[in-house]
Length: 146
Image (cartoon, rainbow, N blue to C red; front, side):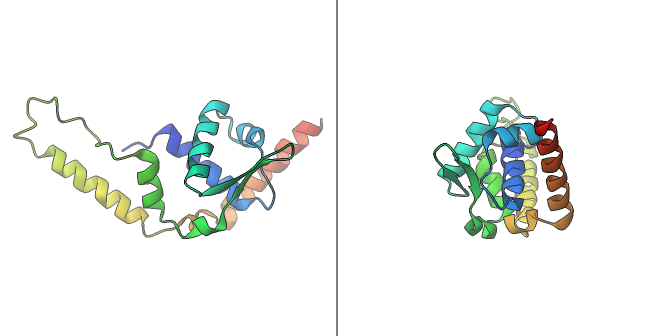
């Protein structure tokens, strides 16, 4: 199973916003992760709509993590980001009525989400990740000043 770019960007954005004690700009996230601004904006808008993060409008605006999101289970968050699509499109397959693969894959997917639901977004912040993101941020700020 491979997660979509949308999910990847969303989770990375949450991790960065969680470690920040200030408003973070879209351009800062683009620079830190080297990702497409368009993809990032789509992801951020989705998360603002879900109330996982907050948007601050205006000249000094940006984004902040909503601490209430700490209780969200990671499996549930990923399921929402990924949507309910099956791993394989079995509808058009000639074997669809006689194949067990669809059920096996559905069971594996449920096990994946059940395992991730043992953890919450709060647990995405660990000292190692926080330290590394702060180093990236410091490097970014140093390169901007030059």
